[in-house]
Length: 219
Ligand code: C5P
Image (cartoon, rainbow, N blue to C red; front, side, top):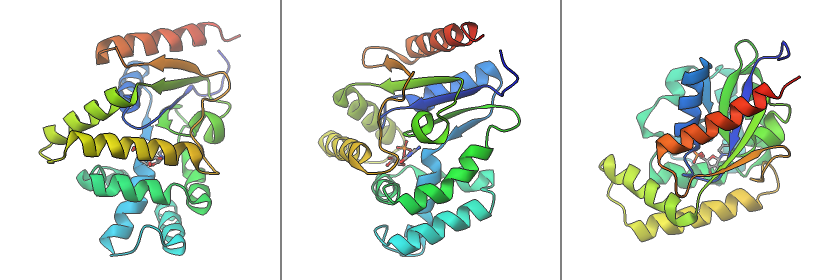
């Protein structure tokens, strides 16, 4: 191992199981975890709270800059209302703005500086940390992802139709894969983990094996 902090970058489409894997890997390796989707969600939430239109480019950039300037205290990202269908939609609109992405980049770059980190999102291995120690590309079929997201939402008492969630997942995939900056693509050197037929335990075992193999292979 080199002296550089261990950075595990996990990217993939919505509801592929990145968050659960990232949390468990962070716990296993004793690393801080950053779910970078929460940054875009916090920008969207702030705008919705003020009655702003998520499509307003200037307001989105201003909100992202203000979030970074505040050094993003944990409470901002721990708000329980960041994972609602309304925020899903608004976050994906603000995340397509290059100026918003640029404003949130410095915070993400600083995050692992001292103790390393597990970071999950869409562009961690491609844009934010191309030099990450290990990169995972976690994916699953659109049907499996829609089913998981539906279960998660209904489990939290949010009433939604399965078909509506499937359509939104498809729309977010298109947006994530077609925006000009921070587009979702598998990073060079990333290990693909398809969780369609894996339960959380099996997915974690596979991710851990991939990370360990990689760390062991480090000069
Ligand atoms: O992963 P999650 O669904 O919480 O992400 C919320 C939104 O933020 C999504 O629309 C996603 O495209 C965007 N995002 C991003 N870059 C990241 C993480 C999330 O554009 N690194």
